[in-house]
Image 1 (cartoon, rainbow, N blue to C red):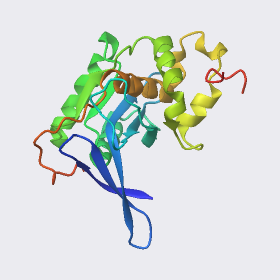
Image 2: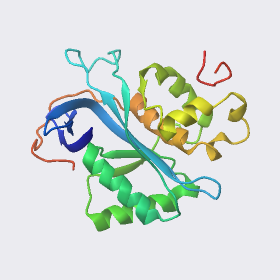
Image 3: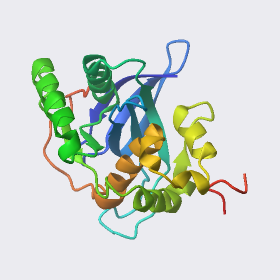
Image 4: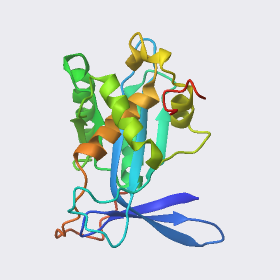
Length: 223
């Protein structure tokens, strides 16, 4: 299956058109789509993920206690080199395709220049709608993992994805000694999940151009 376009609806949900086979297509609707990016370091390549929260019909989306949909992994990418241009181009292209306007990461003093480089690149690509924001609790890995545990029953990730494999490999012992320097996919996930937790979409209807296309037992996650 291949996503061919995304459309933002008047209530700010996102509908994706998915090419199935034999010229047929189907639609998938998401309440919110956010991304998370883990910056490259001397020991860890850059990685980003784009995730969508399933839209649930017939509920009051303004209710803070509403049922939350499953969280689908729409796209992921792990860099094979140090080129930021390649990373940013792939991130921008996937955000346009999947309908993601907000990317979350850690933007402290040590990462300020990554943010500036990203903004410069979006200007060159004339992608003014795409924003890079500081993720809630970005600099606290353990707090981020607490949120992931709260959300884990909603995760819908392919078994062969980098993200799924990192989650399965994570143990209590691996949380020692700077885990944020070891798990780039989990960094990306905790940034995005913190945004889903902190900024749920209420689905009030706004006037928008609906024709605009956005282009083991020892496992930490075990009980």
